[in-house]
Image (spheres, helix red, strand yellow):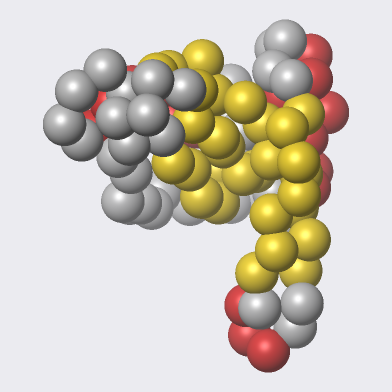
Length: 90
């Protein structure tokens, strides 16, 4: 049985449109993101492992590893280079 779950997430203002499109248009489950905060560099997006293949198909470049200790378990996720770049105060 499949159910659709709607949820809200906090994101940096300058990357919000990109994250919204990934979640709503492409059914990508984003877990975390950062816009780069005025450094003039692309930010990054962390997605659930079952969304990684879709990110690659969309042309996103793998950037590195994100580690979290959610629920007391060490979890590693691939990060992807965001298309959005922070150009001001975020």
